[in-house]
Length: 260
Image 1 (spheres, rainbow, N blue to C red):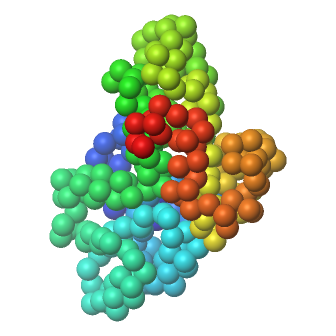
Image 2 (spheres, rainbow, N blue to C red):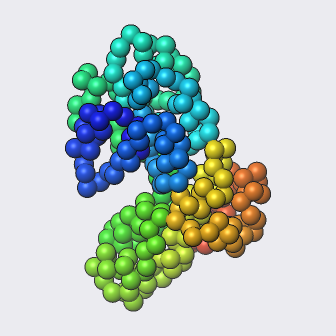
Image 3 (tube, one colour):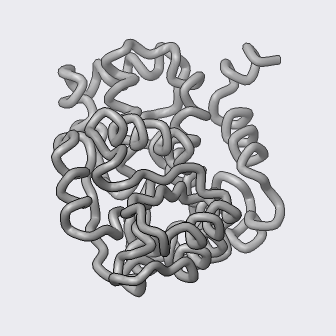
């Protein structure tokens, strides 16, 4: 997500248009609505979005959605000094300044580094060992699908992306002692949803919409099937590490045995 003036958004969009999609936000009210309803992995924001330097909205963003990485991309002017100091205390790791250090190489490194802290990539990395036994081609297809949590991809579509038929794709997964591809994707979405629900700014309805569930009730049912408890109880009972451990133990026993 980019809450930036037009020139800064333009520079970001020129970087790798086939890899990154930026949701443009023109005011602070839209920013919170987009975060609650869309799969946002990173927020790139300018405290001077509305013309005057402001910290309050970004401070609120950090309080409500602490799992979302935030980068400041702004103009270095004297009025920004106090704002940068205030926002630095919220845990924001990086600031980039227009026409000073926003060359393409720096911007690419910023996106790559900050996305590694995103909730979605933490889930993907947590499941990386479980996918290790697959061929590079199949693993790449599954990891790509995990990075699109709202896409209701069929196994036939995944097989097509891997360049094989459905039967071969299923056989490769079974040979690696993995659950079916659809179950793997469902588990990843639930782990992602659980991590989002730990942020105070999200409701179960927000997370269901964000991840493409038709109804919050469906997400609740999946939580109960996998973890034996609804979202409200999950929020207070399981850390992200606990949830990942439970999924690995139940659905990836070969990986669990190898780790013990």
